[in-house]
Image 1 (cartoon, rainbow, N blue to C red):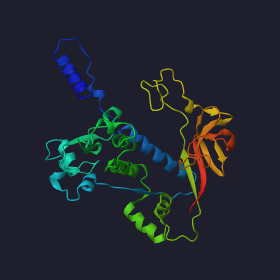
Image 2: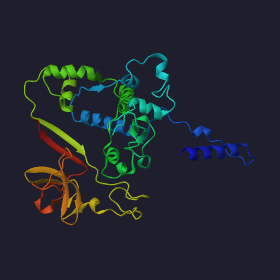
Image 3: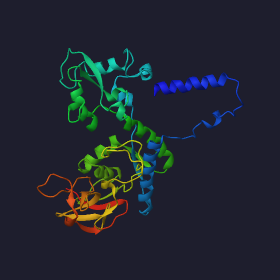
Image 4: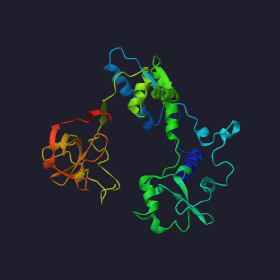
Length: 339
């Protein structure tokens, strides 16, 4: 990628000095509009605003209280940071990022936990799979452990890539800083609170840590007269795949999909059942998330847990075991019992 960018820069620079036909300057349409955000972050913020507006529309005279957060990611990394240190990154004072990773890991192999060996930096998520050269994607591994065999499927380095080895990440703090500024502008009449205020309030009421209990504490009530026995849960389910046409084969496909043909697990209906139908089986209720073969399906609870045949380890369930409760659109609704 770096080579391609440099090549483009060279071509554009040489073109500016050549005597060619007049081209209308285009620099005036390169400015992003005020308030622009990357699509991924904008989508998350729009989704939060959608649900705030949705719940406010179904409640008479709503009183809106929103919990926000303010994070200093650099202080989370180094509590003693101050002054000019904010302008210096984590790798300041190191020859390159490789030596910073070694120092962060105390010059210790993260596989065998031994010191004094020749060390390499290993990409947790390979660059061929979209990984980056940033420090949070690099880890220290000695040459005895950084082998071809350990990179193969089933071994530790491959396992780290698939599961994601837990290293400190601070991107959610950055998102909350962006969200906080925009929610102030969107809902100027709302009351705002912070997590450091919510936690003591929740403990005063005598509630355990959960998202639902945090919402109760945020509401501002001082006591609970009755124990909470139920919780309404709603979840969006994606029925369609927007990447039917693929230039490269994804996991689960042997060949690239150039004809927009659905694979067997992505069909919409089978045996009278449809995707996201709410069904009952083995005394439990769940939702069809996919089909397999001509008479099988995958069923998950609203929490994402598979419902399987008792005493069996595979995830497929025969359609003969399913009793449809009702059809669903792209949403799942369920009244859950707490405790």
